Length: 296
Image 1 (cartoon, helix red, strand yellow):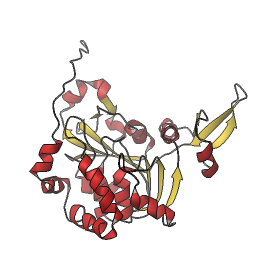
Image 2: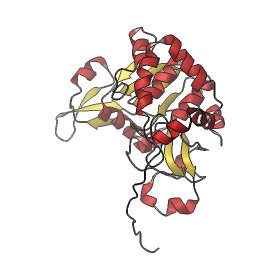
Image 3: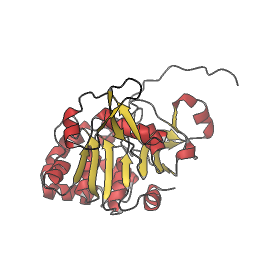
Image 4: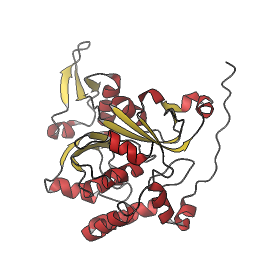
């Protein structure tokens, strides 16, 4: 289905939403569609909120963020999210990266919580009561536990998928698999929709199985200004520019008006970026070696 139909059907006001992807394959197109459809009171969960949640908070989509590390990577602060938190307009929960992934792993495994070694969490535990300490029934020692995270909806962007949602991911692997298995509903956006035979040819690369996917959407360039390995590079110039845009409320609203509300979909957005940006972000070629999976 189209991305607009998927968001309309599967993302509701008040949902806990997880937009997956660690620096790579961040589903910006879905975030922009959520903004266009004016979803409200969302709980935005994500390891590294990145610019996608800065934009969604700027568009008044969220009442709370759940995160580990918050910043404009390599540039500085996420100004919109930080200001909203400091002014008391946005609720928040902060975890370490490992704790966030442990929460997803618990949710994906059907467990109520996940134990983890108490490394570097003392400061976070003092301000976040979701960190708890239990006695290890085997050793009698103490372990730190965090609660399961089960989003209402997870959005995952991938390089390629078949029409049933069986999806290949390569490059940096983030928390896409855990988020998808933990969520009640899954929206998959893909650079390419390919025949089943392509997916079957490389089964170890199938991180998202179709049996857990609710919507399959063909959305090329869905990750910009993030990147999709083998398709287009990260737009570092935009990440730098966002710092100045997000500092100025007038420029921020102008950006949303022109680049989110002012375009119908990702295809129009990509066309509007223009040939110079397309050429600058074009991916080179570095092919992997062939793998022989043998005969059936």
